[in-house]
Image 1: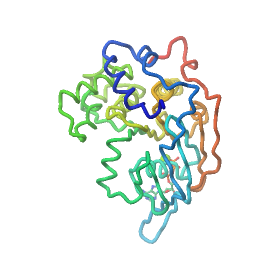
Image 2 (image 1 turned 90 degrees about the vertical axis):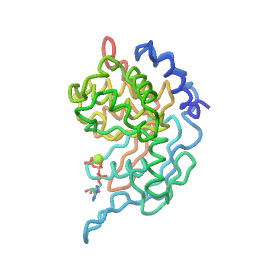
Image 3 (image 1 turned 180 degrees about the vertical axis):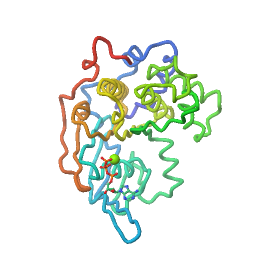
Amino acid sequence: MAPANSRCHTAAYLKTSKTMGISALLKTAPTTKRNQTPGDFPLIDVRDVYKTYHIGEVSVPAVRGVTLTINHGEMLAIMGPSGSGKSTLMHVLGCLDRCDQGTYLLDGIDVTRMSKSQLSAIRNKKLGFVFQSFNLLPRTTVLDNVALPLSYAGVRRKERRRRAAAMLELVGLSDRSHHHSNQLSGGQKQRVAIARSLVTNPVLLLADEPTGNLDSKTGVEIMALMQGLNQQNGLTIILVTHEPDIADYANRTIAVRDGLIEFDRRNSNAKQARSATSPNPSI
Ligand SMILES: Nc1ncnc2c1ncn2[C@@H]1O[C@H](COP(=O)(O)OP(=O)(O)OP(=O)(O)O)[C@@H](O)[C@H]1O
Ligand SMILES: [Mg+2]
């Protein structure tokens, strides 16, 4: 089943990435067959999950009983008003925070009662993160920013740099490897952040408002990159967005309101980001 192989896919296409541009690379990368249902088995299975913040005497129930299954290979958008609990849910799904109640199976592993260090190990092994504000180290080179998660994983320097360079090739930024990240445009910074999120070969990419700081054209380019990773490499993606135009690129949308899922819709006719940029997408 293609999604189960996505990690192998990534490893395999990295070998070829040094000599190819991003478009060619994505085209020739081992593909998830589109007529396969995106995953027939769950990558994420959360049942009746709650998360309440406590500040002094005040309790803020941010997630109030969410049950959700996300299969391997899906690209899912989370929408909802400000304060509705999108980021909190994303933090729970991304093992950045634990739920107070309920159960969470991630790729078949019960993470509900894991310790902080166990969750950190799971994050490093399985998950990649992208944030609205990029979270790059400003006076550090692009290459070193991308390689950073591999230091935490104990990978040797030469291998770290090789894999980081391959990821920069993947996002079309090899020619910026030795720039400092504060010398890049917003769209380039986000591509570097995506490269960094992928360098550990995750099964799931979680992106919290990845286009929130970008103009609409650059936002579409970032969505083209994400769709390529999802459709051609089987990477499962969850993205939080306020923008319906961005959610239209996902093949499923859930809306969160007051910490609950308001609706959960499939979009079998997702907009294709590639056709939205003209004449050639810049990735
Ligand atoms: N660390 C925290 N401590 C206390 N309360 C928090 C914390 N993080 C979020 N909250 C509260 O939890 C609720 C949900 O917040 P969350 O950040 O998940 O919303 P959101 O949907 O992501 O909003 P936005 O669209 O503005 O990013 C809000 O009422 C918020 O004030
Ligand atoms: Mg948020």
